Length: 368
Image 1 (cartoon, one colour):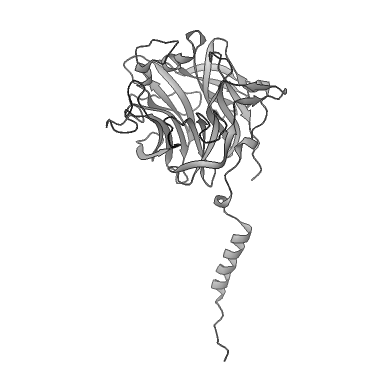
Image 2 (tube, helix red, strand yellow; image 1 turned 180 degrees about the horizontal axis):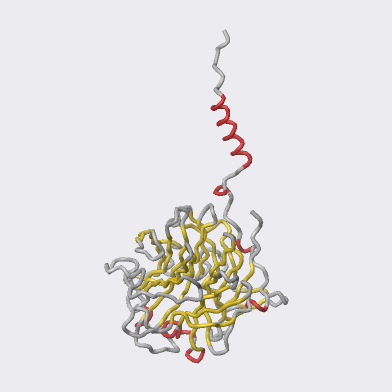
């Protein structure tokens, strides 16, 4: 006897057909493998190198203003004081250019020293800019100390007072409102992984509209003044101005390495979180000091991408020259319509690390 099964109703058939078509024609972005960012990097034009004869230049975070100009927020300090004066004499400035690839021209100091009565009174550094709902948020490291630049070692009275702040403005041109307290401070518990230093913020919007910050932290489990280990942690907030809730999971780690990474830049590509970090010793790329790509589904649990290498210390130029660098750090992306367009980095090619500059590396990611 042949069994009888009633035919599915029309709505059921429609749902089944829709699911089948969706699975065939619209594959999830999440199923796509993380990108090989090293294949995006293009040779650097001469206009993309931003240098100053009187200042060391570091960092560099860009945003396009309503006037179409590209505004680059960067760190600078006098060359005559040497490279290590970044921790005592850095100030955050703004440069402008008609194109993301320059040429950039210095316009003004945005976050100058404001005196020993303020938590960020002597030094501002590590800018990263976020545009959200018509406002601009400039995250940065600030510190205060004895004001003495040292040529042979870090000034730890400044280094160990590093905290994370945010300034806010309606336009990249300012005026910028600074605050009397950090937006993210150290943990008062001595055993906490961020009880000594918090610095190097990177911030992005999450798909639900909340804010994710990844930051570098130093604890006090190892002898002072350096302390350690050096780790990275995440914090989240409903507003760009905080308050931020810290998460305890350590990220960008490598077994046996007490300082494996720094200088994260994070973003969400519509499918996942991606992060570019400085690999301090080839722990993730196997290529020595380099830039490495990390990936995360939730922004809290990160792992190296299957093809982690972003860049070595060899910088190709459009004129055919390949420049060997001493340092390539502070990666920051400019996203245009949600797609990476330029990778800005701090760079230097001299043994004494004086004469550092910002370089804008053009990117050519494949079409979506």
